[in-house]
Image: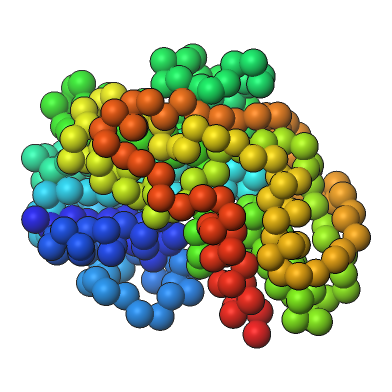
Length: 314
């Protein structure tokens, strides 16, 4: 069995590598040579340098490699950043996904394809709407969310029109090590590490703290998506989430406690978004029906992220 992972040097793509290797699969990664994910220096897989925006090159690579499974994780992956990178977000996430699907269609049409869809697709929801079921109408309110609705629609189109086995996991917020400080958790952990090391004044600069999110450890998320590939149905969206939500304030307090530091909390206008759902909580019954169970509680996940940043800020 051979698997090709786009964005294999990123956090989620990188977490797929050991999960696939454990199954004895041959792993090939596709990554830009300038990828920020190359924080990791040791890769336990072969990497092909290419860009998902290069449609012709993708067809040649997919024909040559002939993978049995394609896991598409390359993207502009940050909801908050999409406000400043709106054009790039749509180009990478929509056109890039179309290029990958087209390359599979013409290069290895029998391959299973896993597309990284997102909880940001749900968009304009209120706390009383949660937990969110997959059948709920999608009303995205961020450029990223819009791009991920298009990603999922492209996947369904190729599933229906061309008979391709396209799997549609809707990823809630995945948390793990090796990520840039572009999300609240990573940004908080970096600040706590800098304060703990005495390299920054004891001040935490934050955005909204009253929102709540369904955070999932990247290892749990990958385990769920592997279940989907092996036992799920193509063309059928499925939430990849824990079914529990925690507030951003609790995340901040936990990281400060784990770091053993005290700090003043200052709200920064630059960290506030034009719109921000008060609660994103997923219904994971379809995922659990595949035999998935959660292994990593949020406190253990946060401890791992903070320990990672304590090493990275040295």
